[in-house]
Image (cartoon, rainbow, N blue to C red):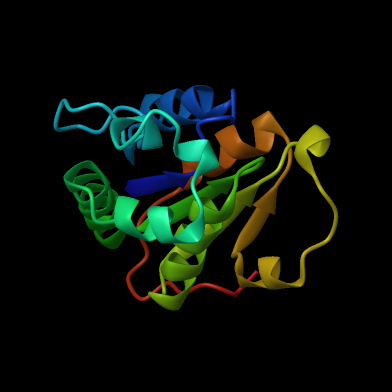
Length: 155
């Protein structure tokens, strides 16, 4: 099973999630360490002071070769995945990736350990499953098999 883990650089559990899924035999895309050997995209690859940009500078930053390459690499992996696992806490990019997965009829699963739960979100209804314990995530990964024609929203 090809799994795209949508999360955040700030999520300290992301590497643990990736490793657990791989231990269960899944092919997992790790945006921090893409399989092509290049480092995962970070805005520091575009500019040192990116946190102080306004919208106009941000729009130009999106056209930087490093940003384009990072986007294309991540989107290719997301398009190729069978499942998108949204791991909280995460930000806007991960939520856009989850929305893309749902709209593409990929299986979408939310992993939100209790300490990361920020409150109810109506659009999480797109998720096929919502997991909150590490044991649930491990059991899900263990039983996960590709089902032709599986779609989101059928909890």
